[in-house]
Amino acid sequence: MRLDVVPRLTARALASACGWHESKVSKIEAGKQGVSDDDIRAWCRVCGTEEQADGVIRLNRRADKSYVEWRRAMRGGLTNVQDSFTPLWSRTRHFKVYEPGVIPGLCQTTAYGKSILDMVARFYQVAADVEEAASARAERTRLLAEHGRRFAFLVEETALRSRIGAPEMMAEQLGHLLAIAVQPNITFGVIPMNAERPLYPVEGFWIYDDAEVLVETVSAQLNIVDLHEVQLYVRTFEELAAIAAFGAEARALVAAALTALDS
Image (cartoon, rainbow, N blue to C red; front, side):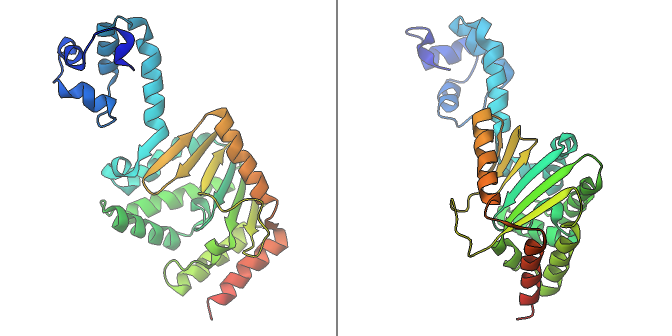
């Protein structure tokens, strides 16, 4: 929202009219402070644009959901983060998942998932409710067996060979991949390290029913719903899938990674 909607209205005057501390307006404009629905309504009222308040509120809520900083999301612990995925995953019928460096969450064993969450807790210095969070993540793997759901997993070969935890744990994880890769509702692809690429590896992403995309960056989780952006991720998935190995060839790459644990 711009202050020049109403000429000559200063930040100090706006703050005074809204009953705010005079620094609040500058903090909002600089992105250092969020705004509530009531803040937006007050701002619009003072600017004489009350009819626009509902639209601005909708945009603000969408923006707040679209970019969720990990520091904020993890304040309630890792279990809350895991539980936050449940509504979206429950309503999704077709998952498309690309992971460049780790095994996708739905394909993880409990031990592998716990190791990942241990890393997360240490790195972000958050409450270490790792056991509970790992149990919540493991519970969601039941989705793989539910009728009417389809899953397309795509991983880089490096994800199979990156050592997470002890060799015994990695062996269990890779063996688990071999077991689930043959399920009829699951397509599991591996992009070989020597594949000629149509594009470079990108960030990991999850596509839900070709309608929404979740991307995890180092600092935040992005929830993408804009149709053009979603289609760009769908296209990226398709291009990466075109160079991936599937079926027996994919399982052979998993088996080779399993054999390499002994070297």
